[in-house]
Length: 462
Ligand code: SAM
Image 1 (tube, helix red, strand yellow):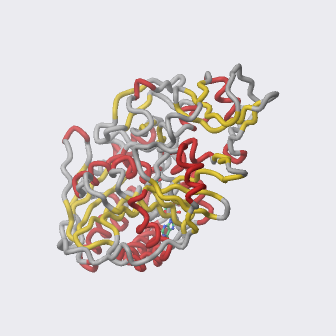
Image 2 (tube, protein in one colour):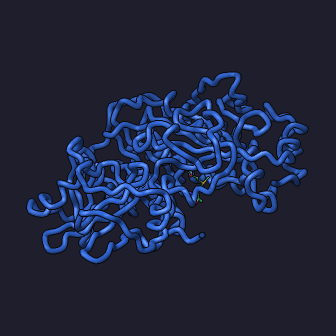
């Protein structure tokens, strides 16, 4: 719990809509912690199917379809269902992105969405759950060391229609007029997360707020050419400072000619609608003394009028090697028949992507550095697929693959990459499942079972 709050921050918030200094200080000193998770609706449709160890479900996050509060923080690390990608531990206020996306975008259409500042993947997994299967999500993170955790969380989420990239915002104008929606969850001074992370309090300074505000403008100016005419920009921070929030909204209207969009909220949600001082741009403030969640700000804009698409999606050809027909015959049975895929080879690994994204992959390959795309299926060795972990966690894996259901203790042994023993007549590759959710691959040999859980993902604590 962090009770000390910087005086300069408290003073700078005076007069802002919804700011009540006493209530704000009290909630920071109360010791209250809000824990929330969001279900992966394509893996687990009902919260009733989840058991969070000692934590009971304490109601749903009112602005989120799949978000739930928990009564206390369980050990997520020791929950196999968490490792299977059935839910994401996400701060409740930021789940409001759902309302903003629904209000600004027709989600029944095939759309292209960019999450520009995506690591570790909270907003990206939410966006993926909301877009249609025929849509594309480009989930980007500029900082190399943070891309791995993003790719891991996207892999666990199991969707094939996501491409993870590692680019600077400056690289995106190469995709001029390309995205229907761009989400910029900007790096910020972090005051909204003071209850969670005491280090942020120590690092806070007015100079840092100014530096963040300038960086936010730079990021937005760099990426905006990639937004289609008529497309939506969603901007958010976890800072209370006006210069990172409403000032940026004014700047987007004045300098970038964006049009602010109002998002309806329910009074009982406790979210404060603000208007930017110069251009009356709408913004939504989340104060922890008013909402059950952390500090957050979000605003939506459209970029002018919708015009006929100018982007030619068939401009480029994919640079990747295609799979031979014989190889497709080997990998195809591992995938659901409900969707069609195309296959590429990267080094020796086979990757499956939704068929309708073929042109998009070529376009993105031409312009960005791709860390991960679609679902890595594995390597073909002597006419047999050595399956990859990504395939095990993917929503497009075939239901006909052999699976062995195990109890929690065995699941945890597996996730620790320990030796496991099972009574089974099966031979060869099989999925290990817990609560019917795939955890990963095992190979059953005559005298032992090989555990193929990725070594760098294994649970280390006892
Ligand atoms: N959207 C993420 C989520 O919901 O899980 C959280 C994003 S965090 C608020 C901001 C991200 O911006 C960080 O991952 C950080 O590495 C990245 N970032 C830092 N500097 C950046 C820059 N100059 N341009 C773009 N992104 C940057």
